[in-house]
Length: 288
Image (cartoon, rainbow, N blue to C red; front, side, top):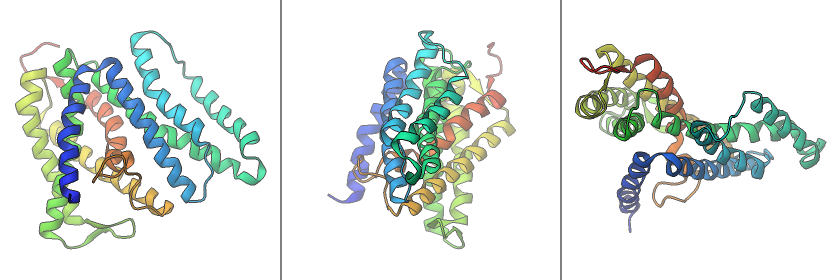
């Protein structure tokens, strides 16, 4: 079976499953985010070790998995996580390096890499749950669409970059980080993302969720999401280059690992949450 065939089969199976879980929300979505965060953290720490770091992998994986679950618990009112927990986690990880790494185990790098890996994976993926229950997301349909909107735009950005780069080619964007990416691909990604944002808002977000943007707000949302998605892709490429690996893992046949598939979303999800607060409005004629 060719790599393209494997990619298509995984996408045909995975996409409906993920959409269904997003629609269900609640514990199912929190569990999915937690699982993906844990696997992503595992891949990140494996790459970090290849780059010469010595993270506390087990600690980081558990912390990464707990973050989406903690957001779920906070939403349900089961737990209340105060802000003081974050600095306590930081000093706790640094304290653990005293016994687990010692002077010769590069403790500063170990603590920093451990904390960064957990926030990069679990901290960002927790926003998929926060988006599902955003203040504007009233009802299952609205909640699912509010989550799917930035995800679909991220895919659109990737597709636009791929075909624009292939058709036009030309100057490389950042050859030292990702040799295949071109300036034409980056511009094409932005254009296609904005067009997709218009189609999604007109066809789904406005009629099904009663949510919309101003014309310039819609353009701004699409442009920022595309730029952020491309930066997320480049960031993961940079991490893999330092670790000396081509793919972060092989959990998804033909697609690589969790980091390979979610690299852009790690950046897009929290940014989309912030942009919703700034740009999303009730559709004209609909009271909030």
